[in-house]
Image: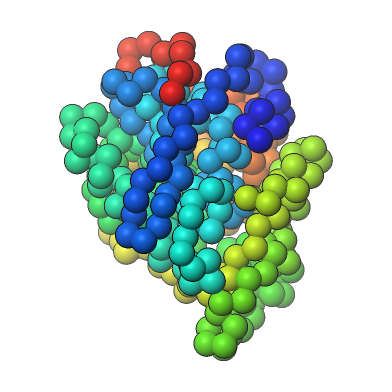
Length: 308
């Protein structure tokens, strides 16, 4: 699966050779969290890469490998409900589980490596998650996101959901369904614009075939709690760390104007980078290269090896 995603990147960004990441497990509460790790364990900085809906560690492999090349020790958790993470009750997975797990992982990494900067990279829905983790924990020194979706914003909801009108009724409908239907799992493409995850047909087809990703099913209770979620720190109150929004310029799922509605309100140091010619999952040139450059480097010189 790693290779399937990697070969869709621009030729100059494909890992060569493709080195499989280190597959590890982390016990979190009653959940066995699958975490893929790449890069030198003694790297000068660490990075946690947070996927969004339809993603998982293997789907994020190309960018994890590129971050490792730039000197980071990279961790990519499979968030509950996706990838290989084992949850005891799939029907009970809620968005709050994502927030708590990501916060605890960031704090655990910072405690284990207090002298190393911790970077967060949030892709798609993982962008707001990365912002929330950073502002809740204070553990991150830098946050890089590809979009910032505030589900309280009706404009954002219209773009998140499969049909624009569904975004207008989603929150009240999900609240009504919270009781008897909360544990019912539905395919992600039914409710979200999963076909807009990329402008490259081959990548769209791959995501929609991926049972651990875009073809996955999630309980309605997860979707309800996401739509009702809010960051712990409002953007006007954010005091750090630096937030870099590297937004695909040709995003047909969540146009950059949607992210700007939240980004413009952030009081913390911030920067925006437009990824030219890139779709929601950026695999096009030059946008993919611009996202890699926005990662920065963990030390004076990027590391060349990708060994786990």
